[in-house]
Image (cartoon, rainbow, N blue to C red; front, top):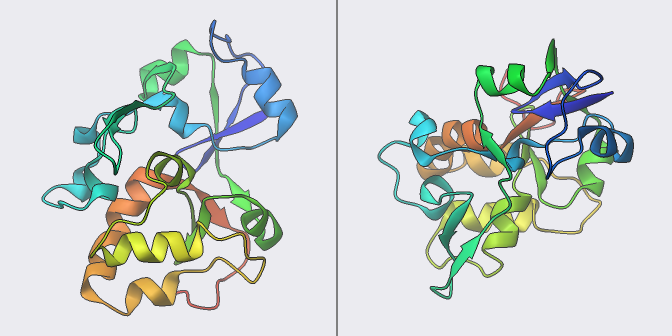
Length: 190
């Protein structure tokens, strides 16, 4: 029984489910699924996003303001993500990256690949359902991860086409990492 956290596989066979989250049920629903968004993660825990002002880099995933200006609360029923929290929950690190194949990425709403890394942007897209004007990174996210296309979700070349895109990749990896693609991507930087 495994679940993914920040791109890494954790064995949850000996975990201690909380009152709000049943790790066994989640693992049985989809083994290896990314549960990172269930953990509290303060904005300060993303140093690669430091100095950025775009919404993808600054919003608090547990409590934030939507496009319309209303306050929304995201589901973050688990404590702050840390090694101590994972140990307390009985998670055992397998030291393996969570792997995805292209069919899985294409089937999952909010997922995309950038330079071989699989990103889970579904919490961002659900919280901000409307496009953010004058934000080219948001535009790429919506065009690739927000689409229901089965034509592929590799956004590598799109991000490498502009400086803002290149600058965003580190922050996106830090905030939204779900794992790695099992095969080399067509746009992957070697």
